[in-house]
Length: 384
Length: 150
Image 1 (cartoon, rainbow over the protein chains, first blue to last red):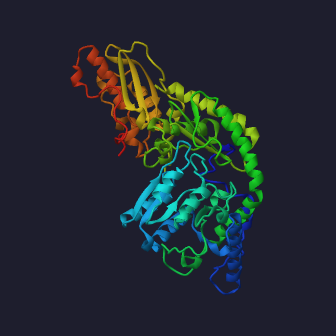
Image 2: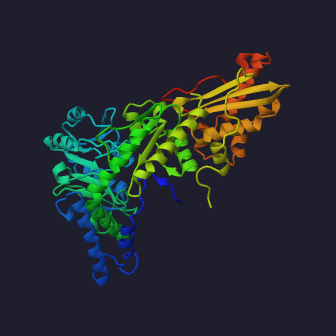
Image 3: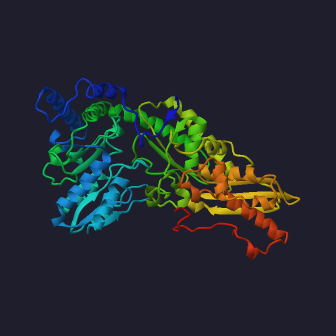
């Protein structure tokens, strides 16, 4: 299937170098890292190597700050539930931005049932959080604030350092979901002032089913699952060595290649945005400059996003994404698009393109032409 | 293998929709749905000797909304009005080899648009009174309401 894949925010192909590296740990180098024999020690060494590489990618103090999880959803749940429940004596108020991922918002909603209070920090029309609202909302009794580094649907990057200063001035904790940002833009958890940081393996071309939570030294959280003592007791269960070794290798490659790759993708991205915005009634969603380098997201009036996705796929073999209600399980438009102030009928016409390592500049004319033809076809069908 | 996503027939009607367009000065016109909910369909009919002689549609909506509109026009074309008004939402979905469960309510409005067009014709020709029409013309469902999804 030789098409143009532009949905890296929902799934990245595992890098062949990562696959080659990780393959050994499901085959000849198998072992349980908790076992004391030679096979166990080999597995343990691979696990600790991976931990060091992930720590380096985000500028963590030490590998011990990294807790491996089964993906970003587990890391977000561990961060939010773990920090809120462990520190509830300090207060029972929680803050999160309006445009957090569902795996951040839903644990918050669950904590609300247990007596926590949740307040949402509004965003402006570009998707950036309103720092004065944060300042106002982060008052006494707030125990944890969750703000994502960057948003996967609209690409907007948040002013994390400014947010961190506000939160820390009040002696509170900051959780940052870095799933969309890690490996794409430079993240430094120490300089950025982050207490808890979520990242995902697959988003940096590693295997699926692996992720990590960075826990700043001195920050106290409690487990949400109970079992053996793996991962400092914070995420018990026998480690998925094959996926985690791949995650480590993916982190190593991302760190080495990020600067050059980001520059390359930014150039392609800018060309795409420039050309697609020439289409009648096409608008960019998200921030015009403070956005992820591989991320282009749009909305088109008078047509619907699922139809855009299906036409691009079936007619042109180009895979894109949408925040339209009609493509979601809940049939609700994306909460992100509504939070940036779009009306329902505007949110329906969304199209998201996220570039990756296999995309190149010479694909731009084909992508632009396919988009033009798709929009034209659907508008010809539309009564609006 | 379990069916994933849309059936082949849905994709065929989505990619190659039949009877797209507008009939100038139609004998009957039906419009249902609401852009706020992501689906708006309109159907135009030309009637001759109490039969659907010609039928056209235009639809704003998802893949199944477009496929449903196309299919219902194909099913109605050439039928007597009495037969055509008996076409149900389920008939259309069955003829498309099924729709995903979550799409059965929100985007399966083709039969409603057809019925509205036929009733419009009946009102114009004096067969029924406007208040007897089962399908209200125009937009339904306001923002914040359920938009028909269950």
